[in-house]
Amino acid sequence: MRVPALYINVLAKHKRKRATALYAKPHNKTPTGAFIYKNMRPTLRYIVSLCLLLCLALSVSAQTRRVQNKPFIDQRRLHYGFFFGIHDQGLSLQGNGYIDPTTGQQWTVKNDHTNFGFHVGVLGELKINTYVGLRLQPTLYFGSKHLAFLDQLTGQKQSQDMKSTYIALPVLAKIAAPRWNNYRPYVIAGINPMYDLTTKKHTLLRAKPLAVNLELGMGCDFYLPFFKLIPELKFSLGLADLLDHKREDLHEAQDIIYTRSVDKATSHFVTLTLYFE
Image (tube, rainbow, N blue to C red):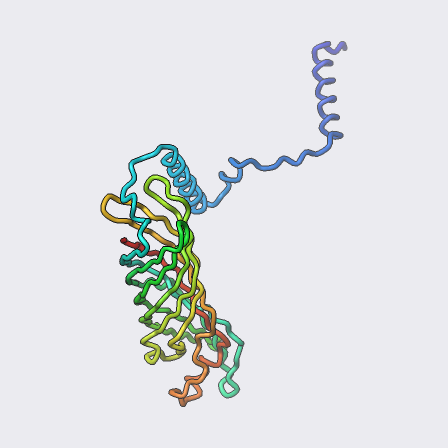
């Protein structure tokens, strides 16, 4: 039986391709940006998209000169204003695995949910030079830190709502970029000493009234026709142990066990603020 010549040619080409695939060196193809973006989780993808759109909008806006609002406001030696905003405050807790020798209880503690609060204050800024300023901004913080306790032995749960009213006096250095049209981004850093007026009302755990936080943040000056609007995002990290280990107000062993179960507690804040200048 004769095999058609066309069939023989097709079979030969298939064998050559298969041999090439077997002996060719593997090629590790690097994923493209589109591939990485497509395989991101939806929430992360939305955040990346929003950031890209914001950067695009700012770059397009920066390409055209516009009439400047309040063109001489940055020439002042002193700047004044007021602000308000929201914040999330919490405690970073370091447990030690303490076990009560009498009952065998072993308690752990954590922040169990987000704790949004409100803050308000006044702003004073001293101009050092064209790009650097020194800020002093007395602030009142109203909020709470909600803690959840769990006994590893019995599964018993306790909770505590640590309400706080802080008087704060942050001293911050502001480093700004050159102004373009009607906006001017900046970064900020400094120290924020805070005093809590409500620590005596704390029960299971008690915090010391005085706290000192390191603060880092970023913002942008928006120059409007009649005033300057400044949104700012800032992160604060406590530098010292806030936990009051000497609980002279507690006399029962079952009450002091919560304090003995924690070695260290430091505060942390995330604040979103609107300044009006």
